Image (cartoon, rainbow over all chains, first blue to last red; front, top):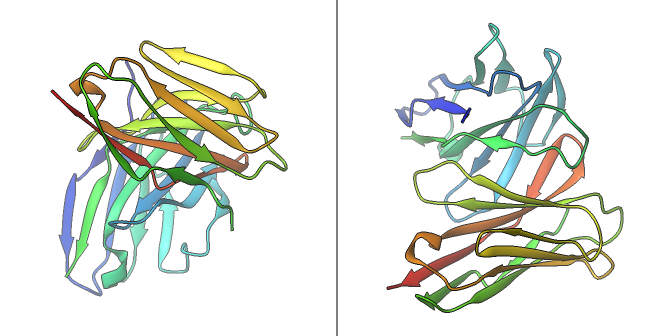
Length: 116
Length: 111
């Protein structure tokens, strides 16, 4: 069964460093998302991406964040200058776009980012 | 800010017992409610997408009901097994580009 994959599973970085989190969405999907969960908090939406552009982004997704689909298979989240509060589990998701609201989003296993 | 609430936060169930828990969501502008099951170190797994008031969906021993007028959904686990131990998340799409999640109900099934 097709699945969303994410690498690395765990990333440790120093404050101020740039990190790139990578995702391979399900191959025929058209919509891509990033979510994150800070320990003890709810899973929260960061950004959605369709047709090579951002569809929507949350208040969290400021200028330090960017997303890219560099080729036909990868979807990346870049944090330019990491802060301690960026420590979280980051989830990538994809959906094929069969219908708004009811479209199932398929999630990857997450990348745990630790900022020291 | 959308309020999607789940209760209880956690529960412990004896193997073989049945259990249920709640997700509440805004009843206005309802389009759908999603349920996910999330086991530690694995991807959250989609269980159900609920759309119609009164809807009931079933997957094995897990079922869900929906009341859009009062803004709640119940998830039921019948005859709980250790493999049902997981966090169950509900999510409400305020628009077609994102999901707003509840905090989850963590179920622990004791053998």
